[in-house]
Image 1 (cartoon, rainbow, N blue to C red):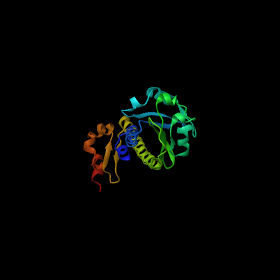
Image 2: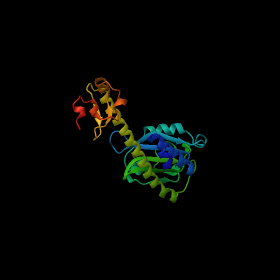
Image 3: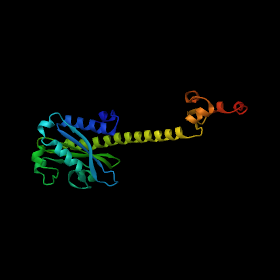
Image 4: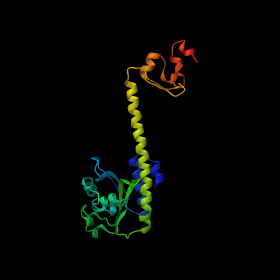
Length: 231
């Protein structure tokens, strides 16, 4: 699972890959991701990321209606299945949602879904997301599966955290580049030995060198004589 997630380019792709692998391995027909709301609260909302197996269209009824219901739902910590997982940081299993008095997302019989499981994706104890899965038939709690899922959630959490960090660094670099390119003054970046590592367009125009010709050269090349000859 984590190998496929690591090979993904985005968080969305990583979670999609993880859901697909888990569904294939355990025979679940539908997978869905919940994430924290953007308002800073600990409420969980749908991330709009789904995995639907090839047989789900036949095995599960009213799937589009169910997706619409999930898109409108919001769960506070401790509330029913998703909120309970987000608060406890532990997986939850329902043998049959048709028999569950806590089910609140449409008529379970009409949906054609029965067994359900949800587990958290965590980093250092903090829940980043909740993944839920559904089967078209009832299923008793799988102890081994329940023991494995927390570790999978931790590994996925680190994959997501790493990708988020890389994305933030990329955005930071883009902002830095935009500032450099717009600056009217020459800006030259060097290492501690004075070797040029970057130059903005204004520096190219002022000094008459292309950036490619400057990178790797000592900054002294831009100094007027006699400063250039000083040791």
